[in-house]
Length: 284
Image (cartoon, rainbow, N blue to C red; front, side):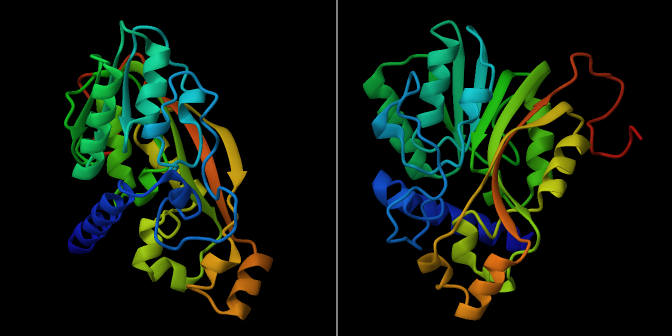
């Protein structure tokens, strides 16, 4: 527990700094961490600028996918974005759900909440709000959301299993999520795993793809599919901060892969109210 709280505080501090950085700085790093690369390409995220609702001031370049593109949001839906940052995915979701819907962004970094609220005030949207809170224990009542999205956030959370249980609780029966995240195939070098800065940069906090999908299935979701998958290549000038030349060569020639995946899952439309929450063990 103590270690988890230390990691959360590390992330909070890092993302307070990131809130003040420009998009170009964040895009040349691992989810905005300070291990910036001199290589002029975007390491993680996909391009949002052509999507309806896109707002440049809300785009910090921190994502690793386009979950809203795959989220099947309908007019009038209530959408929740986990780790909402400056509000980019919320504003894209708002374009989908329209004025009759509602969008709630949750982030536990005060600087991000302040930035997002400034952005929404400029846009004049009265159906988009931002709440400060921990996504391991969301400040939202049960059965609230039609759709939940998140973009490169759960890899930063120590207890990913708890987050998926919370997603299950907050979704309405028949609701669904679409989440983009970083996962692994094979084991990372130990020096990357142990480095706290790399944890805040997304990679060291990632888990194996199979384990990630198991968290989702164990929470009780159905029709779980990987909607998109792509390899993430970390440039040498970042890896050199953590690995020797020989370790870099071994890392690149091995079976380890760092992947961005977008995953979809549904909460069953009929939930047995006489049974406790999936994952607690008493329904087995």
